[in-house]
Image (cartoon, rainbow, N blue to C red; front, side, top):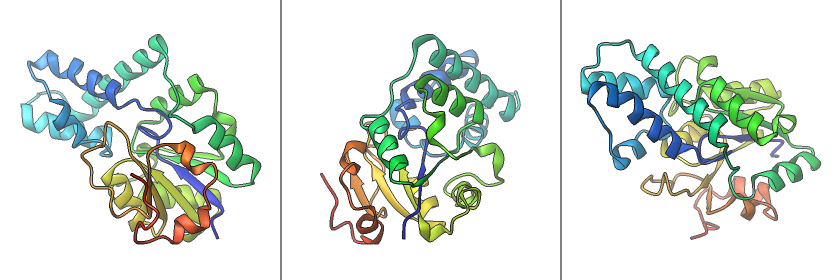
Length: 227
């Protein structure tokens, strides 16, 4: 029986992937480097630190990956605070419905906690979540299952009692490796990702308003996938 819903952050709570791409290139520009939209999309779902370890190696950047990741993170936060952010379509009504029905809610993300906090504060949704787990809370980022397993433990639930909402291949892989059911949210930023191992796929969080979550969690062949 599903008792907890675990949300990914980037792309699920809000579509901030374009901001991440812009911030990555703002930092990379200092070293005469640039990554394309396609290259950035391939890193969606990978932790910020891991992304910058890859950038550091690819572009032979002298600074430490940790420092670069923090520079990029601070750039994203400035963008969020200056320009604001919109929630994903259907997010606010869905959070209200799930809370009313008594589900335990968490965010589990490969993002830094201060970015998650900035978005959650801007959207005024902190009251909905029992726990937030970030990349700083675990040793291994997605596609390892660590963030989801920790979120389940914090919620006091078994993995089989949790349903994950994800938008990236690494995230879905992590959820399934954790022994959890997973709904894949199709987004523009992850349109090239293979989402087929998710239990079901939706184009908007609004589609979950009237969904039978138990049915979604047992659908292992995507027979209810929506195009």
